[in-house]
Picture 1 (cartoon, rainbow, N blue to C red):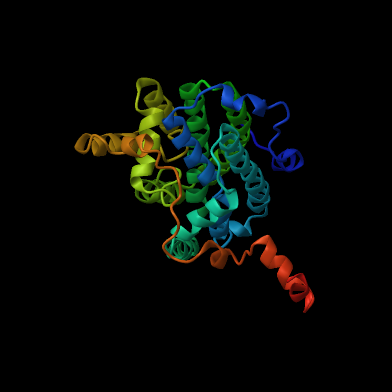
Picture 2 (cartoon, helix red, strand yellow; picture 1 turned 60 degrees about the vertical axis):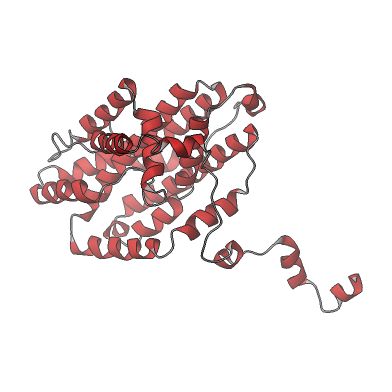
Length: 316
């Protein structure tokens, strides 16, 4: 599984959606579970820009190959979120994408700032921080691609399957970069292998945790992977990551599913109630209005600010 950064830079582009039959989206049903997963996945793809901001204050920003990859990766992920949102819109679920993104970010509160500073401090404390970041990147990209495959299998919606197959091609390329880069860093580096394994067992969380709460993360895991086929998917992820130097036998994805099952065992409606009650809407933030958080104004307000004095009076 080789990876050429030069080839990647030349070939990187927005998601190719030519030929996607958007006009057929409403011809096929999507279950409540499908819709929950689509909202979750869209929100996390749209969160990549904030995740990037965390990486650029770490040691990782000193590596020109890594920053070249991140620039392309961030652009590609943008179009994943955009088109998952379009899929929902075409299905008849209406929302303003920019307002939804702003509300989600506002809901993070001080958590985002604390996370940024802790990541920055940790990266400068550990010279092998990049090994941790690259390994987590590999896990998360492979988990994302696997999740898209599971949703395609569950939904049996032909237009969604087509769209997710196109997105998955990008995710597989992203995984190849992270995996090969992590392997290169870890080979022959016992110190990096030890810190990598230690930190993965303590700081890694499933994709989306932090942006989404524990019950939302569990709802996604239970819907997509709580069956023999889904469990086998997660075992293959652990097996693949376990082939990296120093990570033999590591179990992250399967342990996360087991933990979700334990929580639903204690409370049978755990996770599933979010799906059944269609809990995918983003509630207004408790903090400040979106316009204040983003400094955005309505079109009319923007035009009013540009009009010469007396123009508005003349209109009246």
